[in-house]
Image 1 (cartoon, rainbow, N blue to C red):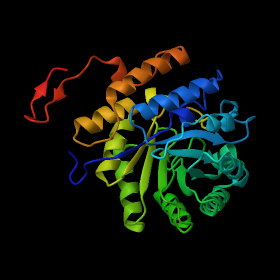
Image 2 (cartoon, rainbow, N blue to C red; image 1 turned 45 degrees about the vertical axis):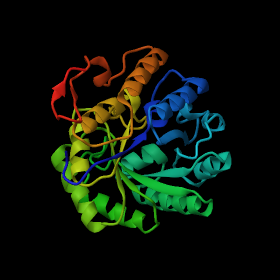
Image 3 (cartoon, rainbow, N blue to C red; image 1 turned 180 degrees about the vertical axis):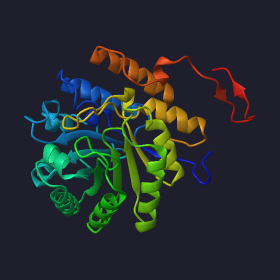
Length: 313
């Protein structure tokens, strides 16, 4: 077990980030079934929709309909991703979103592709979204996209990400997320950036969002948690990708992250058997085998809580 760490909060992003880049439109009813299944598996915080231009992201055109069908749960935090004030207004108007998730992008080229604004402009927009959330009685958080590398400009310097985090922290988000949008990060890079932000902003909650494009996603999760990160994004089945980031493959898989952390003595609050069953159901909806590994592997040994010995499961 990682010293001093007994649990990690998981944010389920499959209903939003997991589906947003899929070409075939997923029915609203199937999105809601995915949300219901995630809740039954123990998820208590999840991205349910993004309030963006439906012409740019057709898969999210039913954001309001999804929100209308959300189960009423006092113990679940529903997150709506928004890029600007207009998106924030739409999310707030549903009356079903608990938290606004803003996005800032670490490079100008990607920010223009993703949000049609500069990197600094995306910081200003995120600060406005956080203020709007507070005024509406909601919470607001922000993710720094392309924090570990950009599909257009390549390497992203730590100093740039630190400067963005400091500017965003002034707006009072409940959390700052670091996203490896195109899956180029490695554990050494994660340790360095997370360590610096924790020193600069010791009281700010941090979340990480990794893509497994180059197979480093799980290692990056473990490293981030070892550095004190308290919250991890993941997507059931490992689905995901960004329409505006060439080559961005799926998110780290919820089942794979849960398996790794739980086997390492770190509680997630999620039921692996239920997640694996949801993986099978979602594969049927998508019409293909999903990228996650644990659901495709034989059942592994399980560790006995009483003896610490390995037993065949």
